[in-house]
Image (cartoon, rainbow over all chains, first blue to last red; front, side, top):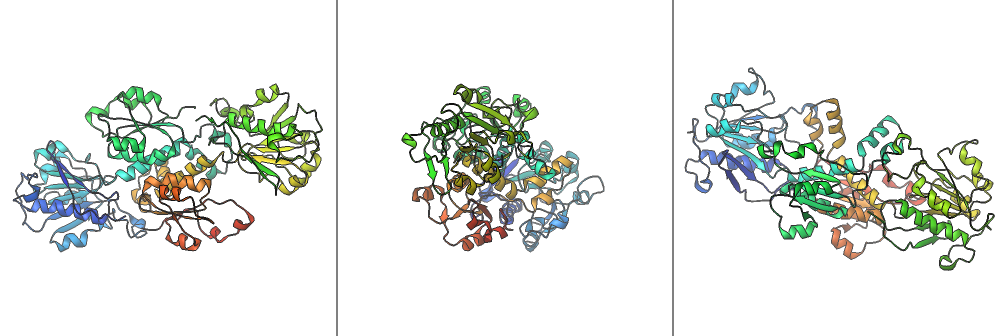
Length: 315
Length: 315
C-alpha cells in the first residue's frame, strides 16, 4: 500500500513539548518518513512559524539556516540488509532518506553504535541538530546528553514511542520530540489478532511437537479452542482497539470494550461491540482480554497487572 | 457455542455409500456427536427406513434389533484427560456418550490399542456392529478387517475424513461410512488465517529469539509484513474458502478466488473477492496462496504442488 495522503496534520502536545505527526499509512514507508522528516526539519528552519505557528522553538539556531547535522541511530542489518529492497529501517539503508537529505544541504551521519562514553553517537552529541532513531534500537537521550547537545533541536522517532527520551529534560531545554503517530496501528492490531489465535488455538506447543517429531494430540487438544463464540474484551478502544474489533467481527465472537468514553455509534453498530462501563464487570465475562491502553503513570500499576493478557476459560 | 440446530440433514453419496451428516455447529461437541450417532444408529436399526428411506442396508442385522456392539477407538489423553471437562475426544472420555449409548441398550467398548494382530481392536472386529474413530488416531479399516467383521454395519468418523477406510471394500460389503460434514470448517478457516498471519508477520523466528534471549531485529524485520494491502488468493472457495474470505475482509487485502464456479454474488459483494477463471493467472498476482480443495485423484498431482502454501513477495 502506498501512502497517498497529501496532508500531514501536526498535533502539538504542549505539556511535554512532544508533537506528533499523523500519517494515514499503516506502514512506515520511506516516503512517509521523508514527508514527516521534511515537515519537521522545515518547521525548525523557519523562524516565523507560518502555518506551524503552534510550534515554538526556544533555542536559537546555531547552524546556518540551510544545512543541519542530522544523526540517525539504527540497528545493523548485516547479512539481512540486501535481502529485501524495501527493508529500510537499518543502519545500512538509513530509512532511505540519505540522498534526499543531502540534496537539501544537510549532513547525515548514521551509526548503530550508541552506548557508552566512547561510542560513535557520543562524538556527535555536541554539534548535532537532529537525532533520528527507532524504537527497537533506540538512542537513549538522557538529561546528561541533552546538556551536552548545545545545537540539538529535534528528536525524531521513526515509529512510535519516546520512552528513550528524558522528556522532562527535553521540555526544559525547549527541544521538540516527535514521533510518527498512527504509523503502527494496523501492524499492532494484526499482531494482536495473530496472538489471540495463537493462544486460543494453542499453536506454539503444536509447532514444537512438529519440530521434535512428536504426536501427542491430547497434549495440544485439551486446551485448543475455536475463537468463534468466545467473549473478547478490549481495555481501551482507541485507534488500535477499534481496528482489532473490526478484524474480530467476522469471527462471530461476543465483543466487549471498556474505555472512558463510548465509541462512535456507527462503529459500535459495525463491529457489534458492547460498551462496558465497569472494567471489573467486563473482565469477569471475558475469555480473552486485550489491553490497548497507553502506559502512563495512571495505568502503570493498575489492577490490570494481575491479569494475563490472554486468558481462556475451560468452556 | 452450543449447537442448537434441531435438524440434521443426511446426504447419501451413492457412489461410495458414504453418507455425511451436516451439523450446524463448528465444534464437535458431545451433543452434536450424540445426535449424529443417534441418527446413524437409529437408521441402522429400522428395516423400514421411513424418513431415511434413501439409506439402503444390504447386510441383514445379525444382532438383536435393540442392542449393538459399538467400539470406539480414540487416543489416550493420560494426564490431560482431567484438565478440561469439555475435552471429550479421548479414550478416557470416549466422546461423552457412554451413558447415553448404554441407556439405549448398546454395548460400548473403547480402546486406543488399534495396531497389529493382537491389539484390542482386533479382538472385537468379528462381532462389532459400529466402529467410531477420530481422524488424529484413526482405526484403520482394511479390506482384511472388513472381511473379518461379519456384523459390521456402520463406520463413523467423529470429525472429517474417511481416508482410514478402504472405501472400495466398504462399498462392496454394503457398509455405511459416515462422517460429520461441516464440523471443522470454522476451525480450519481460523487456523488458516492464523497461519497466514504467522507467516506474513514472521512470528516463529521472533518467538524463537525470545526463547533463546536473542535480540536481532533485522533477522525478523527483513521479512515481516503487514497483511494489509497484500493480495490473497484461495484455490477453492467452498465452505472453508468462503469462511476464510469473510475473515480476511477487514484486513483490507486484495482478495481473489479460483474455483470451478463463481460464488453467490451476494457473498462476492460482501467479501469483495474477485473471481479468477484462470488459476495460473491468479497465482501470479498473489502474495499469499491458500489451497482449499479436497484431495482427490484429480487434484493430487496438480501443478499446485510446485507452490508453497504461503508465498510472500518482497513488496
